[in-house]
Image (cartoon, rainbow, N blue to C red):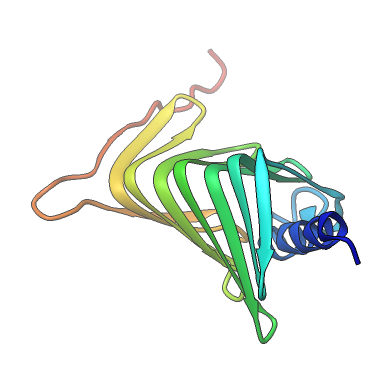
Length: 160
């Protein structure tokens, strides 16, 4: 099998493993049923790890994971996807930005660290560590050391 074909298969496998349950199945079709596309400036497959470098991006349905580098490891049916450098995880409702992210498919959790910013519409929440469940769309944000989380929320207006 050619190295290019092996890399393509490996990267596709990474994409399939990285985004199995993103989104809320009750409100829209499950993203895991959607085709997956990926892109990067370069990539490699070594052992059971795929690494995409340079504007790496995985897209499935309405969800997108983008970073300078994305790598994935699959062991015993559980995948761990690591993204670093200018990390963005974008859903139709939220955008999460950070310096590094680790997504574990077994529990549908993505942990984003560094200078973390979560936006939903005009609402903004900042901190240094965000734990986000991609299935339930619930988030927990924390601050490092003596730091504080910060946020701005705009109330919804009805009828005006």
